[in-house]
Image (cartoon, rainbow, N blue to C red; front, side):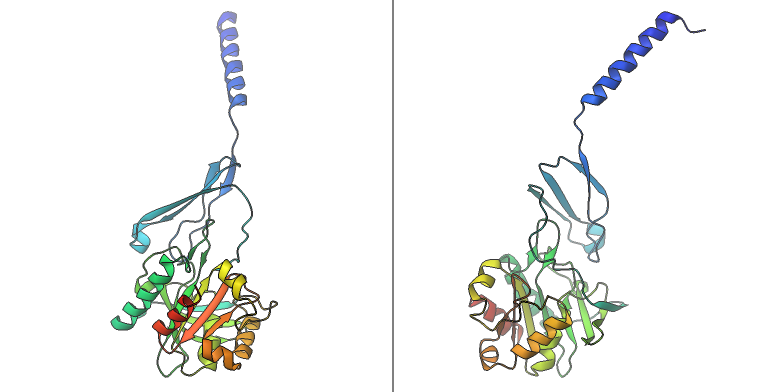
Length: 278
């Protein structure tokens, strides 16, 4: 039988432990994002103070061969930017590697890096990527485009691109091939390639000051047409009929705040159309 003195000491210790636990600062669990197509980790829980949330986006070297960690600290608030990266169409992807000719890949990656270094392609603090770039396969409507959720990567490998084989605005569907889904803006790129036979490259960037400055000053799509939708593709078709659009080779995406898209007969011409207004 346990002595009463021992039992009393144990009760006092348990009481002190309960008091100590009660004084510990509570933190709220915040879900980290689930693993996306490009290999970023997205689905665990971070225990953080609500006043200062730390998002950690980790690029695993075993997934994408670019090990790096990006850490953002900012007050908790809902995102105020467009949700670029969320597919609004049905994506039919055939799994498998794609091949891009060396010279074409080098030019594609060079100009994407220029856009990335200027912050015109990148990633928001909450891990949502923005901006994309594509080149057409000659004599076809097929094109290579940066895959969805790759905005945070400074350098892309061939496997970070997808081959878009067909887009059908009527069924809001995209057929592509590669290791990852094609960009959320694939429908808009396809609209340009379909309407302009000489267009060989498209660059889509985000920049709020530029978007606000040139809204309705440069050819602008309807404010009602959202990004990545058949409505935006139809608006781009309409805008491309205007002589001013064909001359300036740039479109302000009215229903896609921050979104600007340019095209050219090669990737350099499309990129320079963007840089001229910066």
